[in-house]
Structure formats: structure tokens, C-alpha cells
Length: 140
Length: 71
Image (cartoon, rainbow over all chains, first blue to last red; front, top):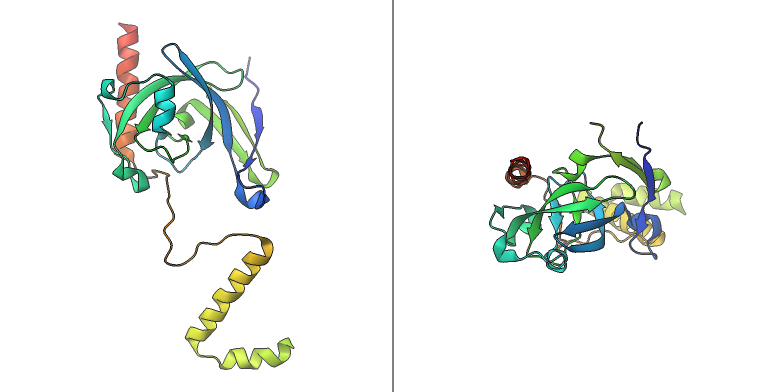
């Protein structure tokens, strides 16, 4: 039986700017070992990878020194060290998936959901003019 | 009013026309409440849009994890 897509609204980051500041933030729950955390991730089709801010990884109980695989990021994030961290993620009522993040030492960065591997796990359709997006798990 | 202005605008040197155009764009944006990028300011762009090495590293990490769980 096909899974129905879930619809979410764009979030106005700055109320005074209204539609000019609307971004597709997706609520999701991240789990790592025994810890779980409700977060909001920016759907960023231009990003090649998922990016996890340092503090969120720390809140999940991840230990920097135990993550030994280095990840080389680009742009403004290039100056921060990043390491690979795989966590479980639950979106709405969909089945839990494994997401691989570039866990960056930077904190003033949004949690980014990018091509690898968020968009490999979920199909997303943007309706920017209506300020909504729809999401459903990939069809296997 | 505009009919008086247009010949004067037409007579402006090219550089001044560009400055006028820029001024009008900022005016429109200000009236609409949109903040435009300012010259000589730095703005962070967090999107790692061409981090293909990083993407490859993460995909390999996922594959290794699958192999570990399967064995």
C-alpha cells in the first residue's frame, strides 16, 4: 500500500519580513544510542550533505573524539572541522531512517538536510507559492 | 513630473544611470520591506553545495554501517 505524503508549511523566520523570510524547515526527531531530540531541519536541495551543528550532536550524547572519520566541508563551513556521525531520524509517522551527518564544530549554522543522504531517503515536493512542501519516504 | 525627468535621465553619463538604477532598486526593496545585500558587507552562506568528497565519505560510512549490522 503506497504511503501518503505529509504536507508541512514553510516557516517565517522573520515575521516582519513575512513571505520573504519563509523557509522549508522540517520537524523531525533524531535518536542516537539512548538519546532522542526533537529538532527542525532546513531542507536544502543545494547542499550535498546533511550538516549537524556541534551542540545538537553533543545533546544527542555523541562524543567528538570517538567519531574518527573526518569530513571536508566547503564554503563558510570549510574552516570548521567536521566528522561523520550516523543517527536515526523519524519524520512524522514514517518509518525511522538512518541519516549520515557531517557533524561540524560550528554552532551558528542551521541543521541542514541535504542530498546525502536526506534526499536519498525522502521524496520532497515544494509548492513555494503556496508556502508548503510535501514529503514521503522513497519508494523501494 | 516623469516627463520632465526622463530627458534628464537620458542625458546622464552611463555610470550615473547605473547608480540611479541601483538607487531605485533599493528604494523599491525598502518600500516592500525587503532587506537587500549591501556592498562591502560579508554574508555567510552555510550551504556546502559542492562538498562531493564529504558526500562520498558519508555514503561510505553508511555502507560500512550496513555491512557491520548485516554480519
